[in-house]
Image (cartoon, rainbow over all chains, first blue to last red; front, side, top):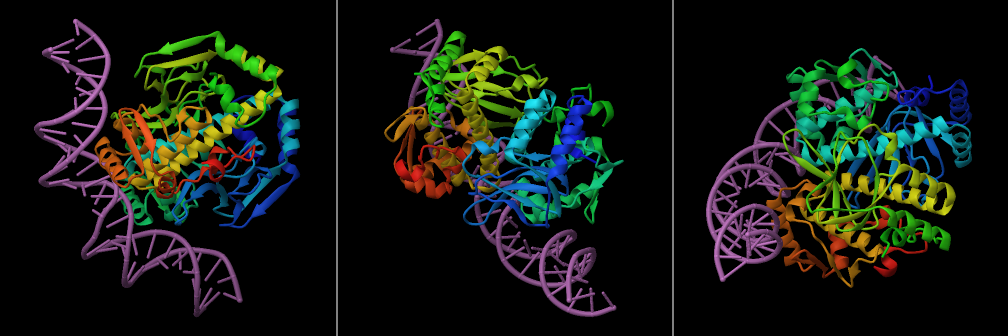
Length: 245
Length: 245
DNA sequence: ATCCGTTGCTGACCTATGTTATTGTTCGCG
DNA sequence: CGCGAACAATAACATAGGTCAGCAACGGAT
């Protein structure tokens, strides 16, 4: 029930002291946001680091004429922008998709935790590197893949990320984003997302209905997406997609 | 002539000790790579951090069927992947575009420099955050902009980045990438890049010939690209595009 | 000086995805 | 338990950008 802990332990074993330090930091200042509310806005001075506890959110950028690109999804265990305090102002927005519960960490809390707990520091570093790797993969996704491939890829990624924090049930998970959100994340229109989802369903790869996703054929989905999980860097304890996916 | 120093000083003043520490670190182990050679490959264990001294390189990912996405360009002063040692294996390639001179830093050199020089550490942090911000902007670029806008945007960004390390001469700079490279970076085919460059020339925005770029109408180019420089976070000393761009 | 591989340029044609519009469905809320 | 606003589904049509093909220009090696 502390998804950050779960996630960091996908990278390294933590001591009992580490674990309770994370619990303390994350328990202190929990905030809630209504669905579709912004949690942070472009142009603002960065105020806090959020640790997602419940719900989905996204990082997005907009163009002056209203086009919008979701550049990342946040699910429980994710944290937005460690060390962002160094920057003067936000260059993007963070918006809640569903209702969100998130722990707010001030810069001093972060500093203290990292000074006293080197393994946490290392794990947070790993987490940052994975975040950037994901961002790169999104650039690849949007730049080179077809609609069918893009959506398959997004589904693979999100499913695996949810699984590392224990939010999947067998082959299913909550998937509370709209077709418009999927479009904004993949550089497609919602109309075309709809068409493509129909195809994916028709090909027996997934089922997506009422905010609930079921993966019917993971192997096929991976093949369709040309999905390679190496960028999630989950192989520290010998884990790999082939081993138990 | 130490572009890393120049770049970090775009963020913060450095002491004389800081500056010579950078010089020492960057002077120690300089390597050269021929044009179009890979500097690091996907799947390899990360061995070193490179500081670009001369030439252009890129970070790229490929799909099994050969499609390729350039996810970042490296120019002098850029450094690839501080702290990458934490990860087991590379999830992307780094390739030289032109002939490249780069300083190779081992993990201990990096650690020593950051332990002894807190301002350098802060500046390197800033640099990492900017790198990620650039990556996000590329996702936006490829996901939402038209071909004309994408290429304009790329040109704006690279010109500004080259300017911060003193590699522009008035409105011109070296621009040694092929139309295929531009296509791989923007998610377009080289044919369409060619068509679009013709349009940009026709509209009197840029001149691009024989690996040399001249910006004829920066204001127009920015407008066309809907370019907002905030993601480069150059405003620490009051610098901003409007002030002296 | 000449040759050959790479890069740039162009035209004809094609297709994946965007646009616009309409209707049906779901769901939170009073 | 019924209303209104999101959201999903589809259809008809439009277009930005891809594909394929060929030739021209350049530049480094011999």
